[in-house]
Image (cartoon, rainbow, N blue to C red; front, side):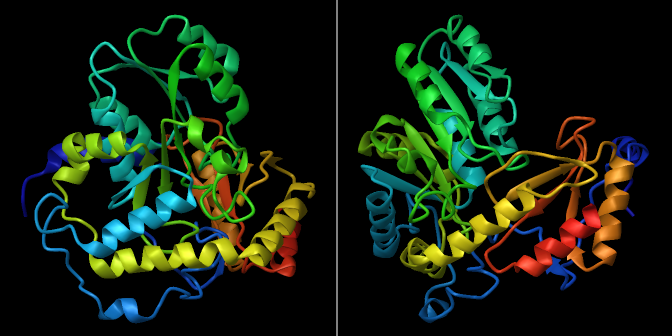
Length: 362
């Protein structure tokens, strides 16, 4: 056995804090865990001729991995999202890292919401720009930092936050960005397919598509497949092709994966009944009285705060024994004292299932 005991110290620290992560198998319990908000993946709604397509793209987009379908699908997605251009990445993580690591330059300033996703933080960390977080959705804190910002300024946030389920104050953010000549970057990962009459996301839903520097939409959640896209101008697309290392040095998505993405964009805009049922479940859960703190959220992500890694793990275990697939979110993923159950509602969950869950938590 290889002598890698030098890894033990950090693992032991996680064990002591009851925060050691382990991979879990799906159990067949009632799904209140996945990001498959509309049930597209669960119900295998994208299956079909795509399985007959190539399973390998054979290279990066700059070499052998570019082909007609990927360009056609990018144009289709750009049109749907009212953007000039789109550029596909292998995942939301790759899209955020690629965009944020190469666009802001030395001397520039990035201001990002404190609760931004790890992929946003990692992209920022790779940038040569200065970066500062602002308190979650706190416009006063953001403005105080805008007053100190230098160079080209970027404000980075999410439309729907993955752990709290709340939304950013987009109108107010846009006003601040215009006042300080800053560029907004909005990660729409958890809004895609869910927010808006056709699932177009928060930016379009509020009518601001032409006023945002860059948007990131991901396909691994409500779209039921895999990958991501950065939306912006043709100039931004050309820039990313030349400087985004997570695109330049990754084998591109294979043809069958892109076909699934294209099919999802035919499907999810039509799923109005699913979004209506989902909205009803959200209202039912938000109106419930629980014995734990329940975060205010009008999206499928519902947070129930149970402070302490040990306590939230124990409650999750109890729920899992009652056939609810609900996972605990532990410190350090969330701030200490804000450990929680991340309960995800789906269009395929029933009123009875949600009510039974409420009864257990109440």
